[in-house]
Image (tube, rainbow, N blue to C red; front, top):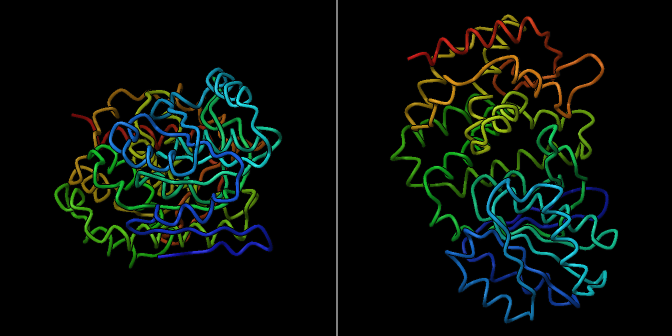
Length: 355
């Protein structure tokens, strides 16, 4: 399956299929230097593939730690100085081979190295189907997640589904949160369809038909980002579940998608209070339980510290916390939410998880 962005210029292809890496050569054959920036876990499992690419293209290999630990100013400085020591020119392409954090980090390197070199996303997780598309790149700050970064488009996204065969279930759960989020942004039919397809842990582990849902997810995101690349309007909808989720992720260092799923449930409660809705919260809590999301962390959550992190969210303005809420399935809005409403929602939220 192949998609293409539809900006006015500087478009890029998104290839989603097994053996997609076979097409990488066409996109990198004209660069003077190629640098593979590889997630350590991916290198451990797939070194025969990365070694072949490096040999074929006389590429440099840069192995980086897995996950969010890479996305710090200190590691960024260490890495960019290492790249500069190789006397690279602007005719260089960085290739991010890994999950979402690897793509975020590599994209930020590319945006800032020599004031901008090309990069290609090679996502290896389900989660990265979301982050690899759209051109958001960056690293974390002591004040919160992804607060240092840029909008910088890749030259291509090459999503080889073979990589998914070695994902542990924790990673599948993390990625599925973004797939499910896209269904919620679409319509009730999409939600019913995906909940029926992946009704429990065994079904989700199988990843049957995952190509279809990844394609639909990317398509959903493309429809939004082409209209609003710099997140001034509708692109904010893609942050469904992220205002609260990012706070939980940053505070407790749990996988991104696990925190986003918690954030999605929380926003349903906020929507019930702030928009006078009647979403069935128990349904969503039970669904997460059926998929075996690790929800014990909820018992450790404390509102005021999370609220302070929510105040650092990039969507906020001078009026305070802005959240993406579902007015209905497939009908997201962005709304300012007062402290008292959030506090009340949090108290209600906790009751669904109390042991």
